[in-house]
Image 1 (cartoon, rainbow, N blue to C red):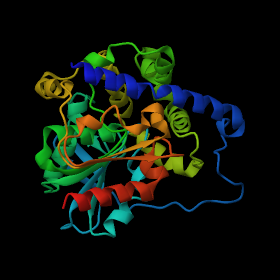
Image 2 (spheres, rainbow, N blue to C red):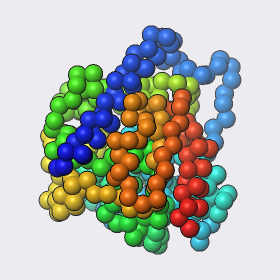
Image 3 (spheres, rainbow, N blue to C red):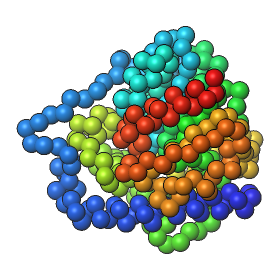
Image 4 (tube, rainbow, N blue to C red):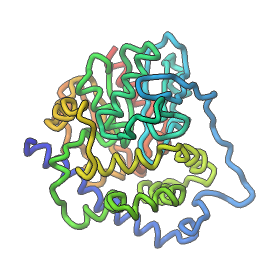
Length: 348
């Protein structure tokens, strides 16, 4: 692995310093919210929830994938990808903004989330990075989408980055929150400063058997904690979280999440049939398709995007959203949708 990729990882993971400080401050300032009452919820008032049309189920590759498919079927395609611990509802206010502009907008539950299921009980519950990208390619094939704008955050950014890097013929353009997230297992073996390591406590918890059991037993409260830590200024209510939390009841969810994070730390193996793809990804391939990257408060000192700007060799711009946490499309749907529309216009 090249030194620039290692330096990029160090600068990106260094944002844990800012995240940890903000999270600890939030816990001190808002004890009622941390005790179970969601910040932003007023007694006696129920905020109306935006909703999707019924989710479709599509056989695609190894999975039967649950997805939203909105807008004209013959419109230019956009595929929106969520991360952990989130689901398709991160895009519930983004989808109508894109569909109303004539875009066919597809939002799938990733493997291990919501109504997505493995077609075979014998399939290994694998969540290494290339496999998740292949799921999306298979879904595009099943929906007869040859080329799409890909947009995402967290696992979704990584997956979109991978498709743009390895299969640019399938990616018209890219919107990636937190920029270039393709994983190098070699880089992930190298230690970081203590404050940065502290920011990734949950990955080390997941590396233990206690962590696997604890996540399985407490996933609702665990993931609500992550939401608060990753977006300390976002005043979501219980109904908003609970709508997404239902997707964590997927029977494969715990296995998928645990495998993903253990694989990243080289504590769980991938499958050999994907080794060639992973070797390409470990080299840190450049992305040539038109791209907008988005940073938020979650990215801390790395919000300027300097650590990864050179990884995007095509038409490129970077945006910074202040006061927004990790779940960018749900916290700032207008800004996220506008990024998709802007990159679509520039790539037409």
